[in-house]
Amino acid sequence: MFLKSNIIYLFFLVLLASCADTANDERNALNQSKYVDLKSYFEAEILRLNYSNYALEKTLLFDGEIEKINAAKVNWKKEIEPFLDLDILKNTYTGRLNVDSVLVGLDEFTVNYIPNDSSLDLKQLQVHFNHQKINSIKAEFASHNLLYQSYKLYAYFPDSLYMIEGSQKVKLVHSPSYSAIGRIIKK
Image (cartoon, rainbow, N blue to C red; front, side, top):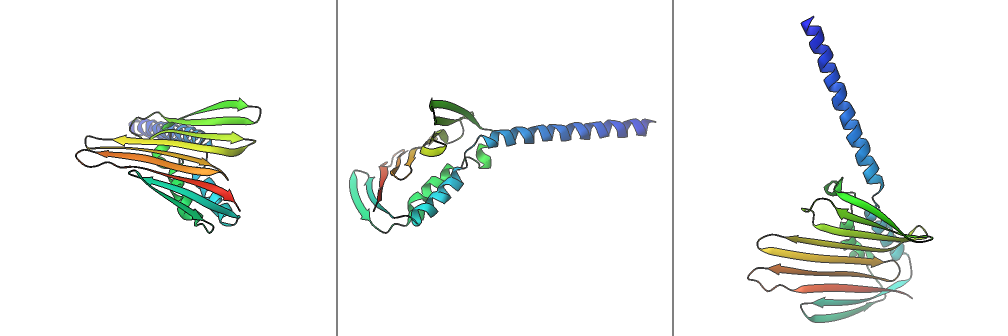
């Protein structure tokens, strides 16, 4: 009798544990469904831009030095690749971002992702939609420790421009700031 009651007790514990895992999986799936797949979006943008007729006017600023580049033939993978880091479907972000949507107009809305965990370097991500298409993406990253602080700002406007700005501060070392602004120009 004792063995039978222990087996029944063990069976109910396993059943409860599996239900809890299912509930967590469902909660994670629901949360993930609110996340925009930016990695796939930017991979598709790279392909689209490679097969489109666009040129690039790029302005680079590093530690006060300015360089301007005009390119008719563009390696869009190289240009857009930094934006692949905006992948909020990574396990790092699962369940750690609050999602808020704001209706801006009749066919316009913005989805804001703000971390609920201060240890994340992503501080804010904003995706603006117009007529169900992405109109702009902006992301802000910051991290710091006793010796180091860094800040990055990403902005992308399809068929218009992209921008990456950043700064790094390292104690006792010269700390440059930088920016890259690329204007996407239809030929």
